[in-house]
Length: 527
Ligand code: MN
Image (cartoon, rainbow, N blue to C red; front, side):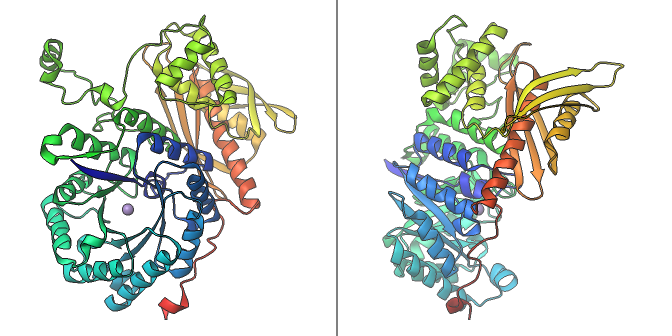
């Protein structure tokens, strides 16, 4: 069977999504999970945009051993050099350079001629190849480009050393039959196409990103670029889990396979949703909360008789088990460690001890501890941000009629203990206001979501907040507790601690918000 290669761009195109924000540690953790998932290439970032991105790409390169690591660059030569530097430590690096080929982009955005663009693309690929053996060239807005010119650019970039050519529908404009036709056209009209691999990159503006990618696979495209949960610019990218499960479930229609360990899909999806602060819609294909829930009586009847009646794939196949944790508060470390292992977690000793203590605390308050609860606890205990501020006590009073009031006691990293109180329109706002009085940072709470990690009235509440700091950008904070006011205060402080850490990193010269350090176009190509 033909092997389809999965190029994951969650950390690059995905992170470009409006309101998307990942810390350095979160990027590394996601990269680690993508490697476990079995993707063929991880696009880790756009190193020339900020020292923070550069550092993150470098770290992913050092970390990841089992798959390729790519980094994006525009066609400006100094940026190609910066990108190649960021990739130096990768075991299998891929430099991904991009330049528009559509007249719309050339005339209205770049204001250069077709010939000039072709020269720039060739120069970028050549320079890339002087550093690295694997260079991918993407023809931005290929879908709206003149086909004859597009093929000329691909021919020239392959001749210049491009080992992968990518045909993107950057604006999500195409229909599946048109895109299939475009891919077939490129494959039959670029004379040296046999010297490069063909890749596609589709966006979801019309809800067709997965359909477009699969149409391209059927035409012979080997590489598919996609993101977990379909996160990305505007309406997002093609969703990795949809492409992979379509190919797996309908092997008869595609006659190809991917190397993805599908049992890791559910966990990967949850991790990305939680770290990015983008909840997955309930009815989302494959990874939505309701994706395997059968509600109608007729369907339930069929399912009870034989699951094949209404189930084309099983929740188990994406690693979604609703099994109950068999260990209780009386169980020991080994049982807990086994459960974590079954869920796919490998924690270091420190992380494990923190998670174990948190588990004991939960088991004291809850009768049934589910896998969902364990995941919430673990998510709360790994990737601990430097705790500049730690919540030690929280007390609220609320009700109807009453004035919601919160008192907090916070320990600062230097040992100072601070205490304050505030009112609000509800207990959560009161708690945040009280924290604000102590922390005193210019930040704004822009999003607040609560969801329960399991079912039942004693479920753990997982709170995700998004805060915006003018100086440092957007940060997602998370907190979990059986008490949602406590979870909220923890989430808010978690985000605040990230803002403080980012400020420190920026002052040290590697923050993600510092000015780009290679923004000038090369005089050679910009003449
Ligand atoms: Mn894109």
